[in-house]
Image (cartoon, rainbow, N blue to C red; front, side, top):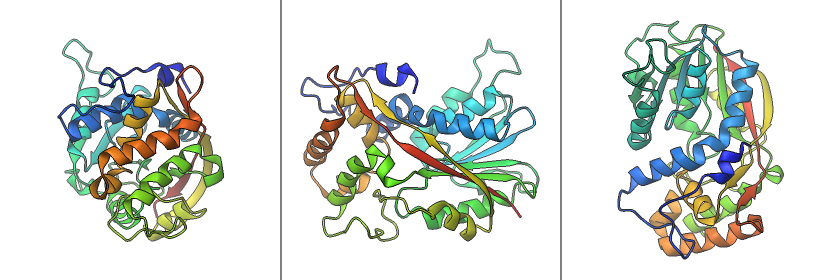
Length: 298
């Protein structure tokens, strides 16, 4: 992990070490995602782009593109990038990142970026062949997302060339992801009666442990042909406890818990779960392994 992930400070943290609401709701969470959490998956993006030789020949469609960091990384390699996301505040930040400044050249990274709020059907060129790479880095690992993602993948692959790679990302083995234990707090608070080895009901957004074959099952459901996989170390590193809490709360995996539990209780239990990972210098460090599957369109 690059040092900037640990050194990134927060200006809106209180003296108590708890996140301080700034009144902007989902916009603040989107900013926390963009400034703190999104870059934790940079090693995953880099590994996939290197393996697939992403470059000027690449026409990329990203599902769940978030605030656009993965797209920006692909664009700097020369790729033509497009992305869709259901989170409008995050998408606004992606537009800021990927819109070239007036003084930038016409060939600057992001100059041809196309972004849309919604699913892949929002791309206004339905003919097959526009894209030759589809990515879905973020959705897998959040319970209730598989059905909707399978449908989105089917729509996306209709816009891609036959045989194009489709990359699915998700959590690695539970025992190799320190953050998994912390995310159990979200699951327990969202539904105290739900056992940790049981999948939450459809439509919930709470976290659950990843199954060994989750990505393969998703690919099969979407009509894709698996064609390789890999694992990447993606440690989560934060400047201090407040930044760790704000980063994790920005993922959306605590949303279900926040809907049914007192936010102060959610923050208290999250802080307690993070405490074993706080170092003597105040930084928070959690080693994780993420997995990706490369599938092919038929």
